[in-house]
Image 1: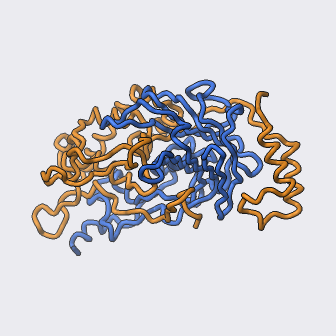
Image 2: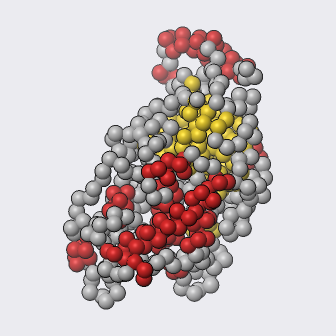
Image 3: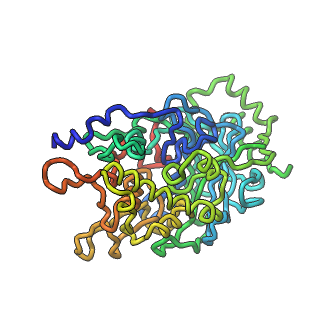
Length: 230
Length: 234
């Protein structure tokens, strides 16, 4: 296997200019990079097999690169989890989160006042609120069985991002062998933290979807946006 | 303003009279904090105004990997899913082919000879990029979550990654799912999922094909089994 190593010698130190764009959505575009509204990542899952709840995790910002914004939620940024039930890719419900004075306030799930690129806080549909945590997690669970969290957490994303940059570099000398074998690859996000917003919600509050995925399985179509006060 | 503030007044009152034991920060609560909580009563949170979209995310990695330049990436973050296929699919498909051209040149081959091949889901380039451009994270309410689980080789055809009826896929995204490797397999893996996986074709100990179907890393962060699932910051 030593000869294999040779293939990767010469790649050596890799680039990393200022204009890096990091997956999954970390710092994905110049207009949002290093910004308090930058979505780092989005997860949606069943918390355990057979559960009737769905968990949404939205990661905002990340200190994976030292110059990035990290550490506080901005009060002029509304985070919105969008849910399409019928498969037309237009949100039927939204769950909103916005911070005020050290607490994260949640609204919905409810039909938005308007779909698309702008909207308002659904003040008539408060879901609950929770103190924004420090290193120790503070959790609230509402009477409706909704669990809420907001605060700094480990960034769970993993990716050898630096090698990815080398792989897609058109220079023929850059990473001709592609990605590295496991004993040489490194998770760029190891040790990074992010600002997480987590909602665990009973499916009964979301309704029954009719949308299906590519395998014909019934699903919620979901996406997250950040929205800045105008 | 229509905001029903009774809930927050109740909360503030409960804090004022010391019923905040459900918070985990009791130890840090000081008399100054209690004075601060007075403010909550008189300062009703103001949520007024219009909020306009500045960032977007559905499936992981789509904007990063499949949009070619900064201007398009910025436009993508200002888009809505129902319009994304019409706006971005053609660019995704061109970008996918461009990645293959990059590796053709690195291998000393004619870019015209190294092209995307239908993947493990049997999708051609146009169909795959159409699926990906409808950029939403799908999560099933009644099925185990997995971004893609190849299952087992149910029909014993030796093609473990190829759907054979027992796989579950596209039912959400776990904190532990290796979405980069899945994405790489779908983009570069071909029908068997291993088209470019560092093969040593002539057994001389040196890889002859690039390793494009795995980035070689797994989860390093701690994950909790209970809410909030993401772990204490480092």
